[in-house]
Amino acid sequence: MSALPLGSELPVVTDTFGRPLKSLRLSVTDRCNLRCKYCMPEEEYTWLPRETLLSFEEMSALTGFFTELGVDKVRLTGGEPLLRRNLPTLIRLLRQNPRIKDLALTTNGVLLAEQAQAFYDAGLHRVTVSLDTLRPDRFQALTRRDTFRQVIEGIEAVLRIGFKGLKLDTVAMRGYNDDELVDLIEYGKRVHAEVRFIEYMDVGGATDWSMDKVFSRDAILHTLSQRYGRIEPIIEESSAPAQRFLLPDGTTFGIIASTTTPFCATCDRSRLTADGLWYLCLYAKDGIDLRQPLRAGASQDEIKSRILAGWRARKDRGAEERKELEQFGVREKLIEVTKLREDPHLEMHARGG
Image (tube, rainbow, N blue to C red; front, side, top):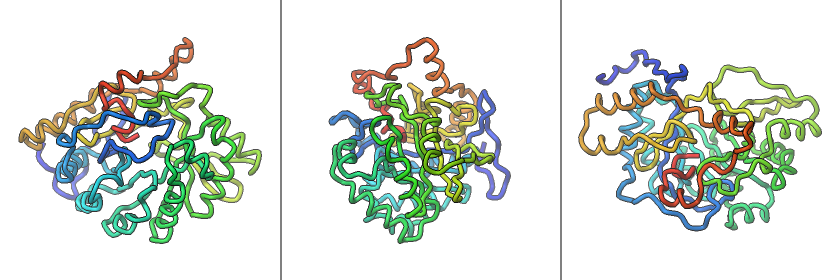
């Protein structure tokens, strides 16, 4: 399983359900500068030991193994990835890999204004910014931080610098921001961004989650149709998590309906934590250690064989399994706080959300 020559056809590696290995979410840190209720509702956390974190060279090497097995989309995540120093260095390393066709980054935007130009110069393709509200008071209540203005400045910087394909991710929560969906669509128009509404998910550290807080895809569409009229689904072949829709004026937006309408059947994503554990599903309780063999001097073929075996054995359909619990009335929080504190890898912010 030696390195494939550039230009050769990539293998199609599929799991037990025939899902291809195509997308990698690469977490560069588990730390975050916000404390959002739907992701990190606690103030204090157990962090990954710094000595276990992968270097940029190690991240680039492991990503290279994945791309030789078919991955062509890489997204940098956290925690909050902009907390990792010298991130443009990693971007430049990854841009040297010609098999990566799409290199994107997801951020909360707090530090984006001061770093966006460096990301653009390093060759980053796209940026996604989390934006759950346009009201500073609500932002502070949700995140427990007074940094709303910095997020808006970050979005404006992305627009000014010239990034294409800006997306705004909004976790839609009943009773919190479900009255702002139209405002967010209109803001997206102004900054030339596609808004993606995400159903509140019961993953990892979402210890405040309950089904009655989920604002569903159907509810989102109903709310928007009250303002815009007929909304048409966009028919396209895509493994992206968002189903896209078209407003009468040509505006597009997306909905990621993992909670009420799981899309496990087409999921081609896996996640590599900042310390080198590979998770095949956002809901997975266990990961595959790639740091240990890498640092022990395992050959490229040995590490690629571990990745290949892991994906071919993949049976994960976490969101569907959670959905099935509803018929028994037992869909509750995924993991209790005590267990999260025992193993920080179980936190959503440790595996790229």
